[in-house]
Length: 245
Image 1: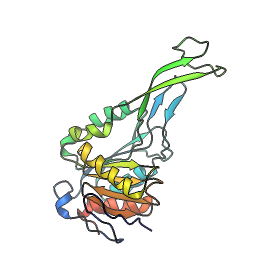
Image 2 (image 1 turned 90 degrees about the vertical axis):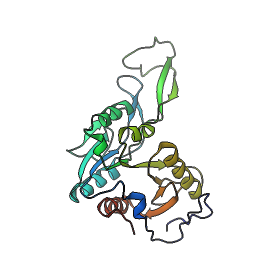
Image 3 (image 1 turned 135 degrees about the horizontal axis):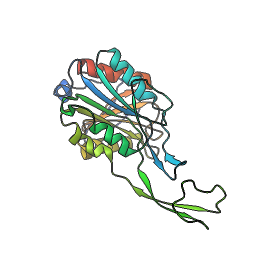
Image 4 (image 1 turned 45 degrees about the vertical axis):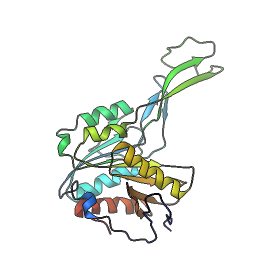
């Protein structure tokens, strides 16, 4: 059952299973036979030349969305993390956040991209320093018998914040995965993500939101989907028609 969202700051309330996203919110961005950029899967941050820190992300939703959009006639560029379990022969692959940024910069005629779905689970932190008991820093591979290893992690720049500069005319959808809080909290965080990063919408999910997925604009929660397949179908319908029901 979709969560019932009430008393949001923007007074946008979800009380039913059917929603209409006004065409005025998307008609300036979404057109027939569009160019679509989709990111998915996890990025990784190296600890040494063998080990990495990464996020849990299979890339399933990104691959399903890319296949559905391509089948509907849209031109799709799919960028996947190397750690993704779900793969695509047409995808380009990245390891780090910086690799993904480079691939996004290499997209030709970025001002003509109509929509960006940024579903990749990127690293929030990078390794700034390694302290290994009894060892000199700089080893290509950390010794497996080290008594202790301390990592100092520092925040990495948010790639989502750069998407509007890269794709000035695109309808941009970010992702927000949350484990703590209430469904109402997650909706507010999705709204905040949209406003902070100058995107158009955010897909929200995670234990804090509950089963399934939500789709937020800056006005609040406008749609819910029970499964990845249902969400992918709905998003492609959005691409095809510019309106949702």
